[in-house]
Length: 186
Image (cartoon, rainbow, N blue to C red; front, side, top):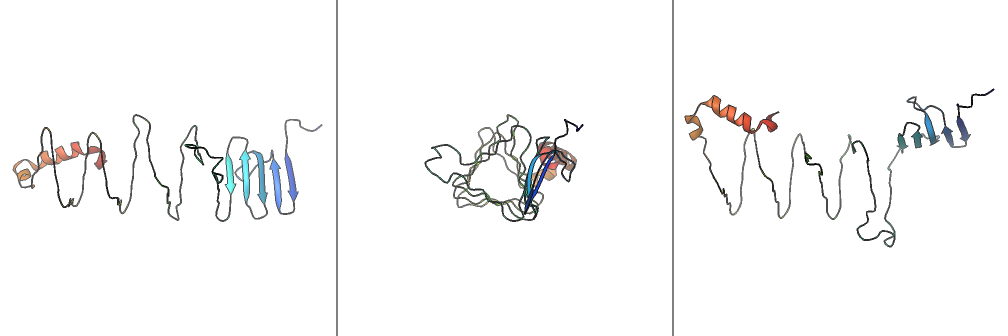
């Protein structure tokens, strides 16, 4: 008598195959999969994974019918209820284009981090930065240039040329700098 708990389905057709209940190349149990003879297709595994394989450009067009997309309704949503979202192009660039682009970290301890090995370039008619504390640490130089420059401090507005710093202990100055910019130096 056949094992009632073992349900496997494989249907090979000219140009493609449909599978269910078998294992894939990574030994995951396939829930449902369709792949072509050119190794393109999709797979859902019984442990909840989804795989799409496309040998060229993958293009999805949505929101085509203006009457179907109501005011304020998005044309595309990617919603990860748990876990992270990673978008990577290790051999290429990522370009985001839109009328407006917003990056929002919602959590009270949320952060937005930008790391670059070469350069971060910002170009806009108006650049505004608002926050509680602003720290800038440069290992080489810092330059500020403008037609008009204003600095204001409600409690204290101080600056030094560096000559005054020589009057104190160099070790105390380094310790003070390291303490103030601990997060940047780590």
